[in-house]
Image (cartoon, rainbow, N blue to C red; front, side, top):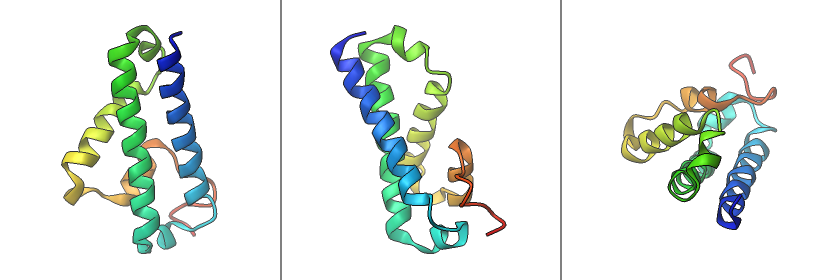
Length: 105
C-alpha cells in the first residue's frame, strides 16, 4: 500500500473516532439540539468522504477493499451539496449510532 493511501486511511480512522467521541456521551435529542456538535460531526463525515475520494483516485485497489467506500463518498456528496435538506437523525443512522445515542434516550 502506498504511503499516501495509509495517510488517507488514517484520516478516515481518526475522523470516525472523533465522531464516536463527539456523539458517545449524548442522547439523540441533545445531539439534535446542539448545532456545534452537529457541525463537528458533519465536518468529520466530509473528511471521511473526501479522504476516500482521494484514496479512490490514488490507490483504487485499496479503495475497492473498503466495503462502504462508495456509500461514504455518496454520503459526503449529499452532505456537501444537499446541506439544507439533511435529516440529522438519518445522517447518524446512515453510518452508525453509538449505544448511548438512540431514539429512546
